[in-house]
Amino acid sequence: MTEKIAIVTGAGSGIGRASAIALLDAGWRVVLAGRREAELKVTAAHAPDRAFVVPTDVTDEAAVDALFAAATSAYGRLDLLFNNAGASAGGRLEDLSLEAWTRVVDVNLTGAFLCTRAAFRVMKNQQPRGGRIINNGSISAHAPRPYSVAYTATKHAITGLTKSASLDGRAYDIACGQIDIGNAATEMTAAMAKGVPQADGSFARSR
Image 1 (cartoon, one colour):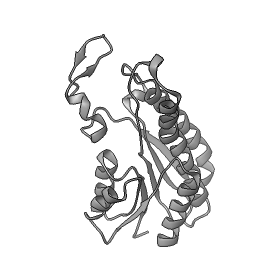
Image 2 (image 1 turned 90 degrees about the vertical axis):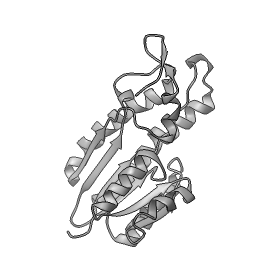
Image 3 (image 1 turned 60 degrees about the vertical axis):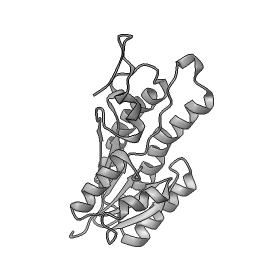
Image 4 (image 1 turned 45 degrees about the vertical axis):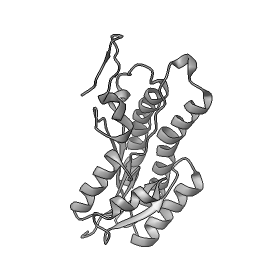
C-alpha cells in the first residue's frame, strides 16, 4: 500500500492536532474530526491536499456513522483510528452534577466506543483487511488526580475498552492499543501550570 488513511478525533487542538500533523508529515491522508470546524481547518492548513475536515460530535451516533461513511467514500478504506477526543469536569465528587458526569462519559467513553465500533465495521470488510486503533488513555488510567472522578473513571474504562477491542479484533487483523500520556501543554491542561491540587493535599504547579 502506497497511501494510508487515518481518522483522528479531537483533531482541532492539543494532542489531536499534533498527532494529525505528525501523520500528515509522514505522508498519510488524515480525516480530521471534532466539534469545532474552524479549528479543524487550522489543522488542515498544514497539508490541505491530504487533510479532510469532517466536523463531528463523537457523542452522536449518527454523526460518527457519517464520519466513517465520509472517510471511506473519499478514500476507500481506513488504516488507523486515533480515539483522542476528550473532556473533563473538575470539582469535588459530592458537588459534581449528573449533567457534568454524563458529558464526560459521553465524550471520553461512549464516543470512543462509537468510533471503535464504526472502525471495526470498516476494517473487517476492507481489502487488505484490518487496521490499527489507538486509544488516548492517560496517567489517569492508572492513578487519579484529586477532584477528577469523571475523567479518571472514563480513562480506567478506556483501558477495558482497549483490551476488549484488542481481543475481539484479532479475528479481523485489527490491532488495538493505548497510549497513556503524562502532562501535555494543551488548552485542557492550561490550569495545571498555574497550580492544581496534588494527591498529598498540597497545591502546586504541575510540570
